[in-house]
Image 1 (cartoon, rainbow, N blue to C red):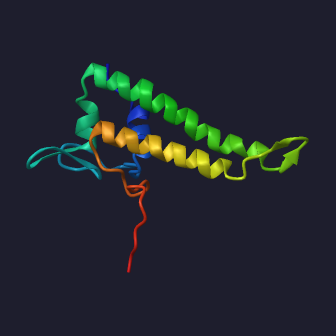
Image 2: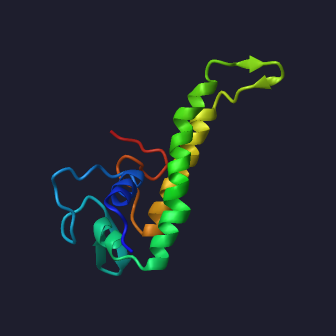
Image 3: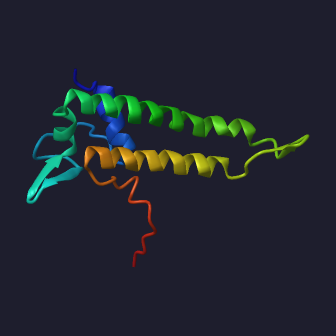
Length: 131
């Protein structure tokens, strides 16, 4: 059982890499590379299309399923933005940033499971200083 084209696109997106568009991802062309062993690198596309069935199952059930739910929870949090306090209930003013941080943490965990560095749209989660 191989990942569907949609799942491949979603893994790339969640990992922080841009869409492929009309470019072809293969063993020599891809935006994402992962270290396998000393001197050996593989592309994200190669890693995803050559997974063992048990690894694919983990990727889909533990990562993609949770990432879809976490991602959809962020826009849904906007339902509470109009209420600052109701009776004794008071909304978490940091709800969206908390949910976004949780989503990004799971995205980085997925990258670690696959064995690739987070992409340019995700980064390593630290602070970077540019000049």
